[in-house]
Structure formats: structure tokens, C-alpha cells
Image (cartoon, rainbow, N blue to C red; front, side, top):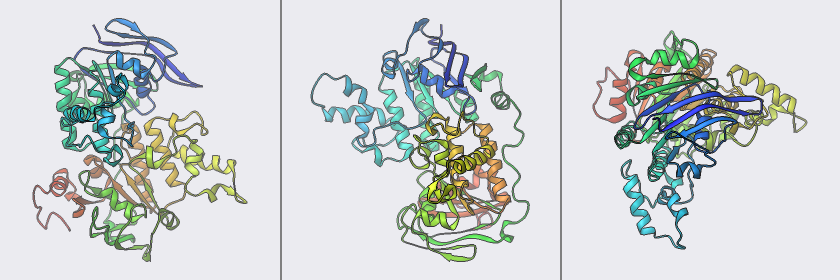
Length: 505
């Protein structure tokens, strides 16, 4: 008997049908993947299972009995734990208070025994990482916040665990720890719903995979009875022959220099960084999480303080003291954290797209809604955004479509240099292919592109040259056939020295 069964569940939001007679079942002690493009209905179904949304029709059965999951608290009582893709922690309190929140809320006492609280929290979180339970969540990295989310679910003694893109912000080492914990939970009879866009993870860790497309259930396959290529074709409804477009056909070093960076440092998180970005090139920045990649590019565009460094833009010396200075020069940055830094989730799509430079959609000092709508329509059509209306809040969109809004926002100012930090994190394979093509089209049009990515296939497939960072410093520059996973990992981990012939420092 399935531990969880979904029968003909339908859910609409206004005129949009998010789920159309969806079915799904989860067996005891299995890891069951759900694959689908952004907007396919995966997250909506998970929110119904967790009691955040209520279905318009259809049934939910747990251990063969129909249930009504009226709220997340009711879901917890039914043995359901949910680790969201978007981190939802209380940032101003400690790790321990977040992990043990359900226990604190159910306590009948007036006082909290913090000594016991820290001890119990440490027993759980220490399985995942060396995180001090007394530390404030706001002081943690994104990856460690994700691990706290997972620890929070583990203390609930759940029988059904939903993991929505759990490895998106994790390092390779943290990912392997998570997989080991998943195997332990599975051996204990706990069933796991695993949502991921990473085919390698699905085929390594899961027993079955169900495919959703445009709110419809397509099929369920046992992992041994299918292939990654077949799943990709099912979830996008078409075959994606080339995930990465052709690279620059000639030597980018023969092109004009758009950006010349010399001695960029903040004295702690990035030190003595030197590189050039040429017209028409995609310049990749690789390295393990914590290497200083994001801090370095934020320092470049005025979002992070720097102590020293010289910048030349299109051959002219420039000084950037704030992000406004960078925008005025034609330099824009797409954050890796779209929820906290990239978007205004409670405002409309149109307002978000126009936010960087309001004068472009203004007349006589007032915002023109017609200009704002026209600008947004042009950019979102270019990015193939799926939305009911441009007046809808960004929070109503799937993660992938939110990322497209963030991209439209930076394109609205017609930039000359674009810095993309994890541009396809949490995005399905179809949308990834679209964004990769967009990035290459921008480069071919003469825009300078810097791409930071923790996905080595993306760095390798997109970049004309790759700078590798480790512990706040650049370790080498790879070009052409040198851009391989082995070379990047050697430099990023410091596990071996590459010869001078293999790396142009």
C-alpha cells in the first residue's frame, strides 16, 4: 500500500490551471523523484500535500485513508516534513531555535531550557555540518542555511519527507552528506519525495521518477527502465539536442577589451584579482563555495566594499563606489539569491522589470504605466516568461519564471557588461537551454558576460575562458581544451599542481 496517494487533484489560481487531475503515489521506504519544467505544477502539488494550499478537487490518501491536510501544522501531525526550495527560516534567532521551533511551540512551560535546546539541536545538525547551534541564522552562508532547513525537518520524526531542490545551494561535500542521510532515512522506512532538475542526482539516488508537464501528469517510470534523455524529452515535450550553444569561433583575445581588472582586493574575501573580459566572450568564474567568487564580482560593481583595485572599462579608467555608479556605466549584476537580493516578490512583474532605471519608463518625472508595460512585454516575450498577467506579483510565479523576471530587469538598462551569479540555479533543463542561448546571443551582440556557476558542466559548456578561484585568490586561467572538469577541480581544491603548459596564470 502506498504511504501517500494523490488522486485526480486539480488546483486553479484565477484563470490559470496549476494542476489538472494530477495523480501520484509514494511507496514505503522509497525515494521518488518528481521532474518537470518550472510551471509544471511540482511546487503547487507539494504545497497541497503540506497543507499550504487546498485542492479544488481530488483526494489525498495517507496509508490508504483519505485525509484533509488543512495546514502545515496538520501535515506535521500526519508525519509530513517539507524542506522548501526557498529558504524559510527566522533569520534573527539562533540555529537551535529554528531547528527546535516545533518543540518550543508545543511546550507547556513558560521558560526555555536553552542548554538542553542547544544540545538537542547540535545532535541533529552535526550530522550535516559543523554549525554552531548558538549562531544566528542570518550569519550563515546560503548553503548552511539550507542544511539548517533539512535539520529542522529531521527533528519532526516524519514518515514522508519532501525535498525541493535540496542540493541547489550545497557544495559537493555537503551534497554527499545529504545523500548518505537520505540512504539512512530510506533504510529506516521513511519515504522521500525528491524534486530536482539535476538528472544525475535523480538517476543516482531515486527509485522511481514521475514527470509532470504544464500541470498534467505524464508518466511514472522505474529508474532502471528509463534514461536521462527520455526523461528530458518527456518533461519538455520535445528533444533538446544542444543544451549549450556554440562558443566564440575565434580567439577572444583578438577582440577589444571591455573590462580590465587589476589588483582588485578587499583584504579578506578576495585578493589581488586580475583578469580581462573581451567583447563577445563569456568569461566563466569557477571555484568551490566560499572561494570568494560572489564577493569578488560584488566588489567589482559596487555592492561589496573593496580596499584597492583599478578598473578600465572600454579602455577608460572608471571608479565605481556604488551599484548606481555601475548601472550608469553599463555594468549590471544578477544575484545568486533572487529571493533576498534580486526581486521585489510582493510587487508586480512590470514594476520589477522597470526598477533599475525608472527614468526609462517615466514622463515629466512620473512613471508611465504604458511605457512600463511596453518595456516589460518586450523583455518577457524575449525570455518566454510564463505568467497569467504582467500585473501579477512575482511571488505567484515558479522559481524559473522568477529568474526570468530577474534577467528581464537587468536587460532593461541595455547593459554593456553583465555579471550572472548562478544564472540557472533551480531552473529546469528546458529553461536552462533558453537562458544559455540568450547569454550566448548577448555575447555575440558584443555584450561582455561574466558567469559564476557551481555546476561544472555549465561552466565548461558556456565559457570561452574560465578563471578558477580558491580561498579568495585566483589560481589559474583555462582556455580552449584546457577547460575540463579535472583541471577546474585541481585548481579549485588545491589537490594538485597543474603544469605551466596546462594553465595560463
